[in-house]
Amino acid sequence: MRHAAIARVYASALLELAVERDQLGAVVDDLRDLGELWDESPEFRRLLDSPELGEAQKRRALERLLAEAASPLTLRFLLTLLRRHREGLLPSILQMFRRLLDEREGRLRGELLSARPLDEATRGRIEQALSRATGAAVELTTGTDDQLLAGMVLHLADRTVDGSLRTRLGRLRDRLLTAELGKE
Image 1: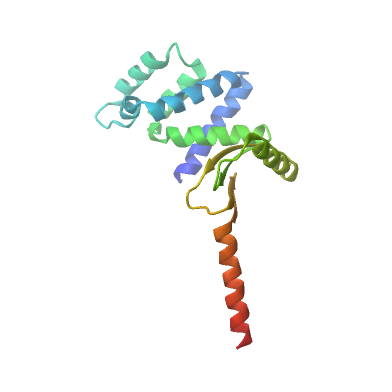
Image 2: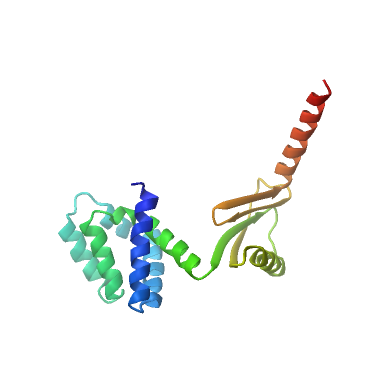
């Protein structure tokens, strides 16, 4: 089974348990904190990735580190990952959990890249238009891409919409070449 599929199984199981036990808010907070810990702490990553440390040592370290900070459900989940030697999948599981939670709540997250920074009003109008088109609440992060001359590139869920000038010019070039070849 591929890593994404395995991550989906674990994330889905945790989401179902959190909803069933009315602990979704606590688990969401815990996973956000774990994601930040993973991103910001090389020591935490080394703890989970270390082949020199055995399962028991990792378990004790996690229990000490998270006993007060995380909900019992989240801690048991992490210990299950350890027991099944899946702790290396934690970043993928966190990402998949967020995606499944967004699906459950009817939300789509995306990234909108442009040549120049967008103001909040423009971002808001684009989010509203996308929300109407998709039927889901859309939340966009924005950024700039130095490679863009003009236009925008949208990454939303599993789709990419490229409205950049470079892509438009490339399509125009292809049509002109096709038309030129058709005359021969």
